[in-house]
Image (cartoon, rainbow, N blue to C red; front, top):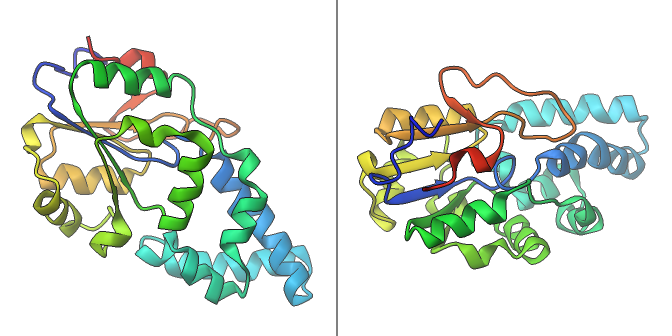
Length: 220
């Protein structure tokens, strides 16, 4: 892995949040387990009926900015999604070795930018629970740019507000569509996450190098 990364050349590091720095188990449990139960209770449905309805909603929104939008799902499901996230916030967890990795990059004087699709309400909750915000030079939210990271136009728009040189930039993200979009734009160093959800199996990362332990990719 370290043979792939040239830390002397890398100046900017873009980092995803959910499934990369944070254990994706929180989000998977929230959307696949907790919200369907709440939806069933609210609309007097069986758990199976609620899951079927919600899977239809999820399929229609996937890949769009709505997919990540608390306000959209609050309207769509007639549930207070922000409140429900607070109720389950005890499950928010930082992945192992993340703090050490972030501190090592700060020590190496890299520009560290969080680039997330997470809705501002979700981002605020997760930063309050984890305190990771102290490590970033900047946090960029896709909702402020107006398109999800999966869209090819995202990286050009990001470069206009957070200038970077593609040949000297690294992105770590668990979403392969995001990595493909960044690759198409020309970002040189791209890393996937081998096991975004600590309670699920390892995932296929296609041709992308994958991070299992952050100690394996420490600068220096």
